[in-house]
Amino acid sequence: MIIGAGKSGTTSLYEYLKEHPEVYMSPVKETNFFAVEGETLVDAKADPNQMNHYPWSITDRAAYEDLFKDVKGEKAIGEVSPMYLYTPEAARKIKATIPNVKLVVILRNPIDRLYSRYLHLARENRLPSHDFSDALDKNSIWWKRNDLVQEGLYFKHLSIYFELFDQSQLKVFTYDELRKNPKKVIAELYDFIGVDATFQPDMSAEYNVSGFIKNKFADQLIGQNSLIKKTIAKASPRLLDAVTNNTNIKKWINGLRKKNLEKKPLDPTMRTQLLQLAYQEDINSLQSLLKIDFSNWINTAAS
Image: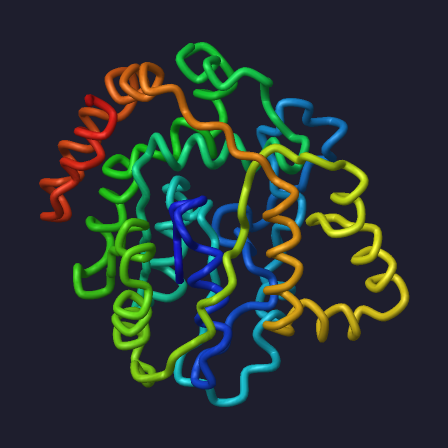
């Protein structure tokens, strides 16, 4: 199980795992099942602040188990749900249901993660507020929603996993590692879950890129919820699966989407303010928990 953090490379890990012949990954990337089992999903119109913002979640156990009906003897079976990272109840349910699970965590500088989440929501036209500086207000929606400021409190969230699971069941990577040496990270990931670590997936595609949309008409054609995608899905769900699972097609579409996105740099002053307001203490505690040096996260914001 890849439990997060969101906007830290989880989509890339999901795609690289899907390519491995000894791995079966849930066809629904973020099931969120262990976080929302038994809940009634809220309609987006009834949830303007997007406090419950995952309408594709699987809430029924039978439906969740059905996602794995096509397993054909693969050595590793998995899913990716970043919501599990910041949902304590999910950790307890995972422990009760799959006590010997292998848990994979990938962490990104929490300030960069938050800003990337902001750009992601901008791409999807789902911004909680247009001005990112609102994240400096502890009374704002940026602090109330778990997927925004709060998701970056990694020590707070991971502590329960380290209490519930043996340390040998947890593997932590960083987004920086993935960017600098993806082959090494993927080989270690494959080895951790017990599959052939020499297999090399296609890493030429960049997944889940975020930013402000330049051309809305182009986005309607090639975006996440494009008209073409909806048309194919309506005509033949099986054809849509074939198209979306084709590496070359995904690479081509992702390249077009990236060209239609604009990233505005984060203001350095705001970076420092966010570190002091939200993340400094948590990062210090995280370093002690994981025995990993995150001074670059602190120095980047402080400089």
